[in-house]
Length: 121
Length: 135
Image (tube, each protein chain N blue to C red):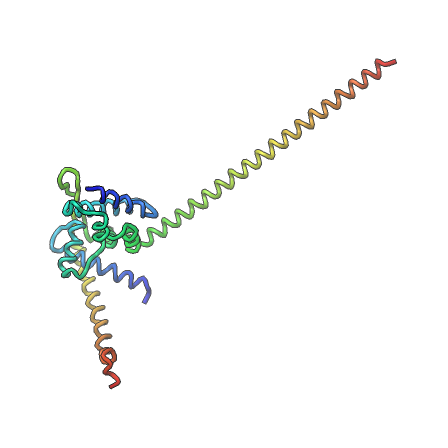
């Protein structure tokens, strides 16, 4: 497996999480970070340096769109919205993620005795 | 926004090795997030911002790790081309200066030579006239 595949997998996981949250409604960047943290029971946090490039990628591929909303007098918020193609892409990402999880689980199931030190006993 | 957020954002801006349109957009987006945080925590210090967002250099590093690498390959190519262009320009300029200097020295030498010849001719003429006039 190439290093690029691992990098892509990491990026895909972030995209999957973001798309899943955007299925609930339109949110802005800061809100997305907070929701990821909250929904994961404070176990997962996506830094802004990973969040925005992922949103730009999804936007470039047409999976999400955005709109600006003025908050107060000066501040603007960019709300991201999932498109139908984004929902389809999310299904693909979830399916890939489950396949990979199953594959990893298979490895762990096979190696479990040696991890516990019980295989040779 | 308080003074800490200004300092933090300035440091973030300085941390970018390149600042094209994409980085400008990212900077504006993260500026929005920093403002949101500062609004929720009006007394936040620079340390609080670092704890929440990470060190500015860390943010930039994560950004480039996650950005589309093909864009940055093109950017590096462009930078290399600009460097080659600059070196060629400097080399041409230096060559032009050397050539001008050589031309000027040559002209000066020729002028000096001309003056010396004129002086010589004038002296011979004087000597000739003197010899003719002398019985």
